[in-house]
Length: 203
Image (tube, rainbow, N blue to C red; front, side):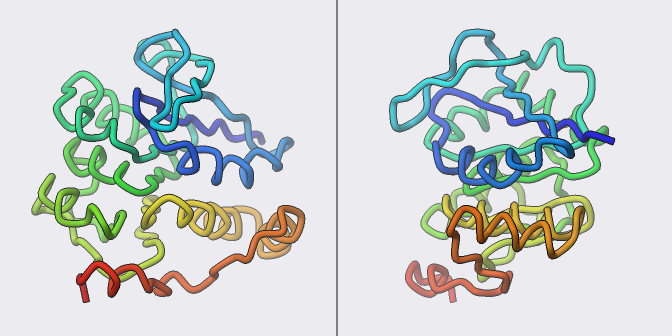
């Protein structure tokens, strides 16, 4: 059965946080339906400039099998956007898999959906993200962290490694390896591989 993967967009989202993982998930056309979601039906502008068309708003999407929340400078305003946080808090329990890339983890943390969950985020912004909730079990050194239904990744490009790990868990190693080969992507399969934690003085 096809799973519906919703991608939450907001002004100032990071392009690669979204389209890196979607390059992987989007090539599983029979297995996964992609839905771009935002508070407004208007195209949503990324931090880098290009805007993305929206398929559904947070007001009219009933449920999702999977959720992906990117990071980007827009998360700074997002953590103070209570309606957006309330939507995250309401939709996450309906999902089978809930994922964040980079500072998108700050939105999960502030919404209270990863209390008691092991999670990571962009290492350059780690301190700020961790400040959003002391109840999260923050992992300083990790490319990504999978804890139950939650998958959180380090910064930007790490989202592709996380996406392939989720695909491997859901659809098998052969599917994930085929996608990495097809996209000519050097997949970091070790979730603990993280030279950026040391570079930013976290370990």
